[in-house]
Image (cartoon, rainbow, N blue to C red):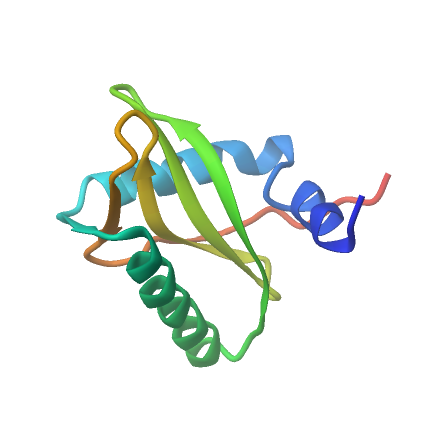
Length: 117
C-alpha cells in the first residue's frame, strides 16, 4: 500500500468520515452544476483546490476520487484532502453517463481527526 493510499484510508475512508463525504456530495448537487469536459474540469478544479489551500494557509495532501450514491444516482467526486484535516469536494462525474460537472461553489468539510490503532 502506498503512502497516499494509507493517508486516504486513515482519513477520507474512515467510517466517521463517510457521512461527511455524503453530505458534501449532497450539498454540491443542490447547487447549479456546469457541465465540463473531464480534462478541463480536472485542471480547473485542481486550481480551485490550490487556491483554497493557499487561502487557508494549508497544503494539499492528496487528490482522491470517491464513488458515492445519492438518492437518484451514483457519482464519482474528486476530493482534495488538506493538511488541516479538511476536504473540499471538486468536480463530480455522473457514473451512469460519464458527464462531468463542476459545482458553483465547492463544499468544504472538517474531517474527523485520524485515529491510530
